[in-house]
Image (tube, rainbow over all chains, first blue to last red; front, side):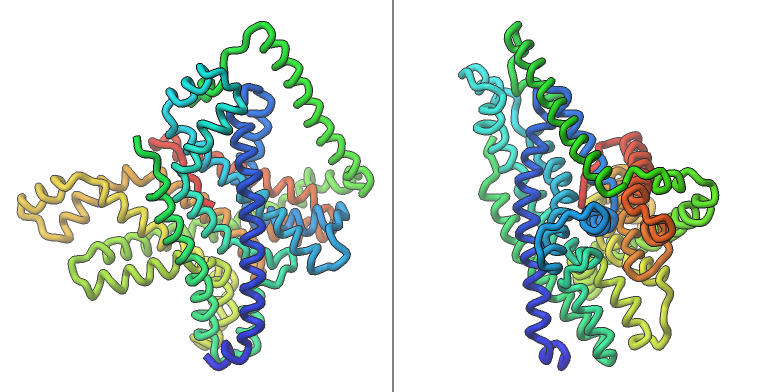
Length: 222
Length: 269
């Protein structure tokens, strides 16, 4: 317990990094995932195929490999530099990797949400003269979103836990701090582990409750 | 499921417009491919000496096959132990005794909420302090995979048993079966069929998660690919592409298996 109290500020700083990684990657995944969903149901076969390939590859590759690819491959080997500052650069590379991976799961969730929207909704929209983009954007996707609030919450929780893997890109978030502290305060290993685990429980528990409640409130009555 | 209800069947003008749009999309994709090509070219990523090692038999024998063996060993050990853990804790969580049910629920919920990497770090770096011996990287990875995936499997099993009609257990009790006979002979075998697809998709998650072994120095596929091959031939990108392809092929095979077993895969990150 002593170590956690003594190092309280650095532990909080590490968790703040976890929160920032999660928040930005979540926004990015939501946007990219929605775009991918639109592409996967588009009238153009080439768009469907491109999005389908992307999702298949992204969700079947280990996140560790995705992040190493963005860190070592895109960052070091292709020389993509997002910031002068190394820490900021690594942060954004990690965000890119997490977003690329998570958006595939957002896309899958949204697509299964589209399946719950009755065909009559799209047909009615078309009979009003709406085109594909309008039908999807104003009628079917909003209903699909309401149907998949709970799965999206599950994806957000998984993303929060997955940010620990950002350490392979060199982002010092909670897992890095935990490893350092285990090595420094060898006599308090169990307390340190429980402290960090508790931190994640504290982050994820409210998310689960919030999304559970939102899912009930936003469910479409049919 | 087709999404053709989202748009009208195109008329003559629509067909022309779609052709134009398809051409534009193809052009954009080609442009993207060209951009990647140029970036690779500028950084000398197309050099033959970066790609040809991936075709050499000795590279496969030294790095890829041992790495694959490491990944599969961790995954198989993880699947077996997580299966046992999941079954035990699912049954414990459905127990009639409060003093079994509540602790089992707490354990399952705790390990589901903790990032796998923290479990692996705790086992690998903390084992000496906690149990007095340093455990191997393999043991640390399997420890983490077992506790995390075992908890998820416990929930899958519990959901599967709850999905059975109540009449099944009532009939079994009416025949004079004891509690453990009802669970063992009637409920679990039936629910196993219903939850096989979910179990297979969890195995895919487990297989992908075994790549975390790289962080504690376990010789699995991603480690052998990026720290083995890439260190020798400085070809991070080609090696990463090959390793990703191997994972995609294995996972699609498992996916197809899940499909054949009955339902579509429920995706979990």
